[in-house]
Image 1 (cartoon, rainbow, N blue to C red):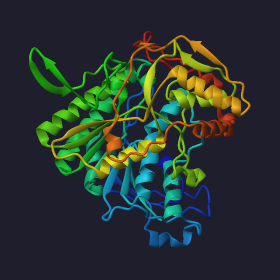
Image 2 (cartoon, rainbow, N blue to C red):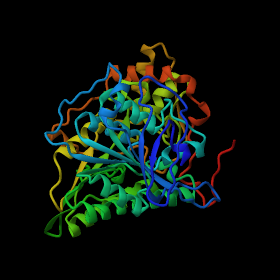
Image 3 (spheres, rainbow, N blue to C red):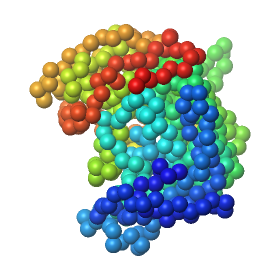
Length: 482
């Protein structure tokens, strides 16, 4: 547990545990110098390295001290905003709140006046260590992030560190926080990661499917009125030769008509796990009366939100590697360091895209407009469609304006997918509920490119080219050379 604590801490343990205090490592006039922790006896399960069986440790539940006790440590320039706050603070649990989408969402909801708790095993950081990769941006520890947020805004975000695949841990978190809404980002979210080898495929499906099942059972047992907002993916649909509807399609067959779940054509073990999630959630809504919103999200780009821009300690991660990086973010980093843009195959692969500022906005809209008891609703969460070739052309044009010599190269496609296809997906429901999209613009591309240039010295060019093959995946564990 010691590695979780970065400053002097007052630690409270459940019975059977002994207190631990770690000396102060760094001093800062900005951040409070103490954090109060509570722990359960539930084990924190981490992904074991190859040949190693998982070990158990205490799970840490952390929350910053009350504002009154930290007043002397708060910066004079603090924001302390309460704009657009709900009349009565709603308790929202953000599972996976240390990740790319989760961190931005947790801060956004906190700023809007929601009472927020983050639940995270911090395993995403472990993946970087395992694979020898890193975020373009230097990201602070979750504890430093939350201390900074508290110091700047006066708002506390509770922290529960543990694995939702451990139902005892999740039970403790639910009973302690009593969420009225759960935003579930807590899944292994990379298709290439799930295709590295057998162990990662098994981990992805176990982590994602069992974790979501545990969340569903926790809602049933401890929060019947709790609204589940689950991050799905547009990748569940595949690339059919008909329009993609929002979750459901009305079909007339042999003179009879019915509205059925839209057919799914997943293209990786990761995408298959999301399909399994959707089926499990739909079933529990019907059987138990759970209320759930499935946000089938497109490809997210960008790094900045209003909240993460407030201080360097709040900066979000930005992945550019071949495992976790997504198309537009990768292209901007490649252009910044003079690497040819890596277009897979013919480059006609078309998908829905959205700015990370719209991700947080969509989640907020879903929470503010909850599903009814027993309702499983599906929103397609993206704002625009682009092919890979179109994105490459946009980045090339934006790069030239900054004096960059941007080249494009076609590389063999490591995936099994159509490279030229029809794609027309509906995405009207969130717009109808008030989503105001941030469309991809020259100014946004300019900002993203300049952001990549700022941190170009952190780019490891060896991580840019794809190294995971859909067809060559095998049972033998794949390791990373030192």
